[in-house]
Image (cartoon, rainbow over all chains, first blue to last red; front, side, top):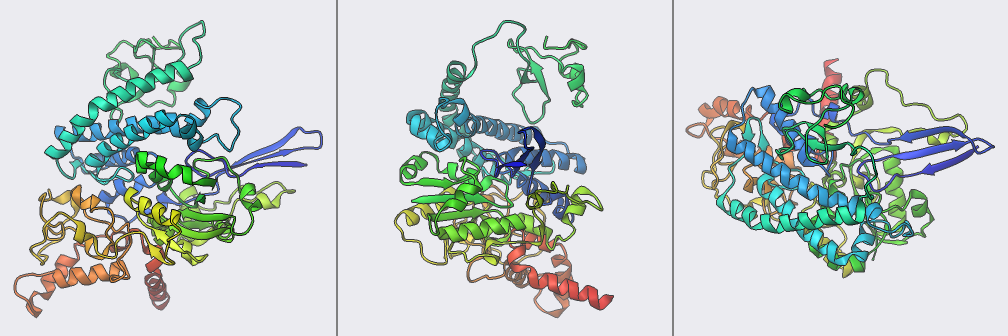
Length: 274
Length: 316
């Protein structure tokens, strides 16, 4: 029997190893994905203070703590039966949008970038964030600067960028100060410019050339013009930005009422986007 | 400088924390040779095993030790490294996951009663999933640790301080890359009252933006916690929860903080008649273990756990 071990799996958040066993003829006998890690949030969250949950559950993942922080805060809003006042809701949305911005940069350049941006002949020693930074120093600097600005916005609102502290049941810990508002306004145009550069880069360097046939499904938001990731449901959209519904098999896993979110006119039963 | 970064039981936040250096990362990068870093680089455990003893200049371990494999990796990195540092609150103190301690039943709580991991192939018994340790442990419980970069995760300034020292070969044995003084020293809030007439939880009151949170009745661990984060949480209107670890003066953070709370609490005039009311105020401290040992239960909570077990035995 031949054993192939990929230990550990690398360049993604989380622990894992892959074990592949082949018989004498080289045919697959068994393959195992092992996740040799358990911290046990299900156990140690018990008995803690409810209002601590947004901070504690953020530690599920340090790459997307903002998502866990707000998911937990939403659960607390419901548990306390507290309605979030508009300014607090906007603060949470702005926080999350800034996070989405910074997370896209993180993925596109530093985590996925080694696969997306580096040529095929680059070996494993160079196929990483450091290889990307060496090969694209100017882009690397711009992205590091842009990400730092976006993270600063997350931090101004959330207290800390990694493992934020600001969300509480029914709202947030404090209003956004004048100083923070000025910093946000100053950062916005520079970040917009970076976003345009990155979108162009994505279309020119990364996206494969268009293939004939119906446009592929892609993730979008409902309604597609509202960039409120943390309150909306992810739905497929067409390349023109119109909102669709998941095909029947996928819909089983989506608890959201697509009809309501899409303004009452989704093409139910259609296998693809409308 | 040959650098290795590894995560044991962790969230990945310590790995992302390096990117928080921003463009300053580009100044450090040319001086580093990354030999092992699963979050960002494709080197495998076998590559690490092939390195000679002390083939790594500095290894940073983040995460709590929760499995037998975590311990093996900690020992392997210790053997291969000239300097080994605990990076982040989990490796330093046990961190949030150590609130599960003792945690003997952890897998059963998570996966259901009677849970057993899937057995390995008969011919490959070495591929069985690693055993869970009975307790989550900080790094220093298993291998000698040369220095600490604390925080959950470590703030960018402290990481920069670490790199400056490491690249200059100036790390002091036992060095903790944070302030020895308490967080209060760098907190912009003003402390006046120095008495505690009530305890409030963060969601129960809108904090005054300029006054000390402890003065306002919130259990803020600033007085017993190292500075080094520019008081990030108090600035955001939330009490410090102690992620940089206790100051050398405080020692056990829960005992130090309980002592501070007990001496600050005042119900009317000083003296015995006020004691029952002062006791009642202190009972407002909900979940003392999770609040005062949020990151440090593995390192400091053991006597308490021993005491609880002893009490159960006596009761039985």
